[in-house]
Image (tube, rainbow, N blue to C red):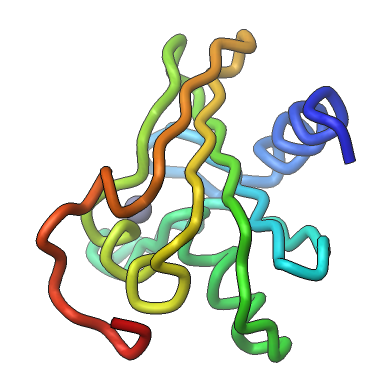
Length: 129
Ligand SMILES: [Zn+2]
């Protein structure tokens, strides 16, 4: 799947975000080593602390379907610049996909990328450490 197709999938997926309180819409597309695409959106709760980010939704969907090996994750938000994952998502991704590449898109097509291990140096050790 090429980058333009991923970009369009991110945009389409972001429309499904349940950001009723923040109005900050985020989508993620997690790519497994077997090239499966698992999407995620942010889902907010009236009890704000129970809100979950798109990255963790995608990862938890994938894990619950039995996927264990991941290559990269794409993220898109409403911001005009690429938005990196929050600290909680970085830790959970590190727990299950420590070697993953993170590719961030803005809604208008700006792109940035980094290895997760560079986004979360000296991380708390997880099950894949
Ligand atoms: Zn997050």
